[in-house]
Image (cartoon, rainbow, N blue to C red):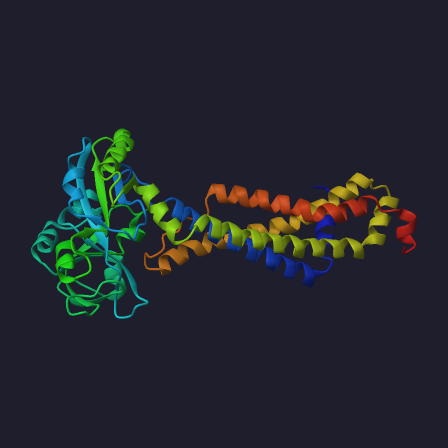
Length: 388
């Protein structure tokens, strides 16, 4: 620490170059913090105490393949199954195809399997009794300024109605509130309609189910129940795969995109570029100070001390930029979540992200500082002072 003033002075010897390099490092670690929050958000999907009691059963081939409705009665007979329901993806959009809505056609008891969702008894009764009724999430209602009693048009990007039009009309009969604030970003954005109305109105479904949701009586028996459910349709033309809610959510997402691979690839490219950029900065900084380093050795600084000072300068450069970048990410992530209206529910920069970030800062700092530090350590005093 007694040489910190020398290291600091050397680091900002060329202020413009150092500041531009710092901006690049800040941007890299800001991106790291944001993308790591996205990855963590996807990894946490389906993780909850209630979610652990639910199993999802879909087609073994693909999540877009449907299953016969007759499976419901058979699944309900499996020992350990407490309740079963089903749903279909509706693919709704409001006013504009870009205004996508998490819309599902569900059986009336669907809400019963999700204690995280709160609906008043009166609104639940209205939903059960209204053929064209719909329950909408609190944040979704706020987003489009909907209220109970509104009759709204909804486009289906997948299913036309009997007239061949993809325009449907629904009556909002209730607002869903999420008890689980961690998962609220999804539940508060849902739009639920009646499966029977959906099945009778579109000619393309014909009694098919997108997936089943099962609530088990004992979480410890979930694996056994899942195997028993899949055994029902084994060797048929509609074989199933039953998974925990978390595993099923992760499987669906991976069929759309491998978030972990995407995030890892982006960050790999960013940090590779950062190594080249900061390495070039350190090489130039040491090359410009050749005579100064020779003077330090002349007045008694050992080769090891010079090596340590150059490495410390490199690590300090990465730490300054990295800490600012992660700090900005910690400030921006809550704002992004709030500004999305509940569509995004990104976790903050946790202790794990800070620790990984610090390790990356030190590792990159040592890596880019190694070559110029070795050059400084091996510097010949006579040649350096002679300008050779």
